[in-house]
Length: 56
Image (tube, rainbow, N blue to C red; front, side, top):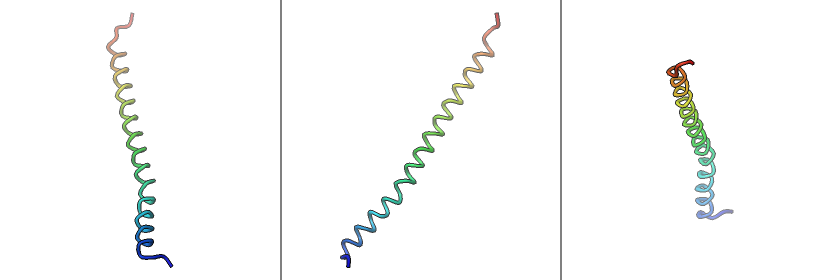
C-alpha cells in the first residue's frame, strides 16, 4: 500500500504529464499560425510589388 507521500507524488507527476502534450500542441499551433501570417504578409508584399512594377 503506497504511503501518503507516494500518493501525493504520483498525483503531482500525473498532472504534469497530462498538461505537457496540451502545451506542446498549443505551442505548435502558435508557431504554425505565426508562420502562416508571415508567409501571407510576404505574399501580399510580392503581389503589391509586382503590380507597381512597370511592364517593359
